[in-house]
Image (cartoon, rainbow, N blue to C red; front, side, top):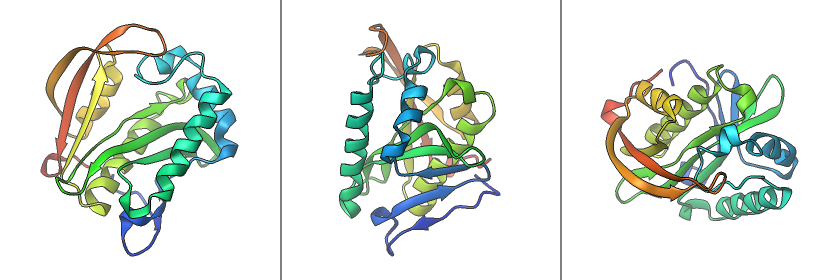
Length: 202
């Protein structure tokens, strides 16, 4: 996104970095154990988890601890990592209000996937767009990828509207692609894609 400061505490290779990305209102950083209460607050809410394929409801402390362990293992991979998981911290409150990811990173093909979730109490203020835009910038400018893939469940119009702002295009539909862990419903997934040359910077 334009007019946003960003920084990476890293080696000479961004893919080996311990990253902290910064926007005017947010920090995108590694998950830590102290984030568990905010993680529980954000994901133990069907308004959020019904749009996510692999998040159970109720969302328990055990699930949160497993997630933190997964993120720690990713960080240990260094330059071999194929995924980045960022906590979204609202700077003014020093509170984690969501998460954003860059997954299935292929340096051979220059592609990646990923998604975002946001605590329902913090939706509607542009925080998701701000974080998602910085994730895109990181992928294209720091990691030098050329294509990003995303998706959204049928009915999640807010997600699709946000993606369109950055230039994502609808590329297909996977019928009954997932049984959502939160509500048990079979859901259609719409597939979206963004090429670097089509990226609309905010």
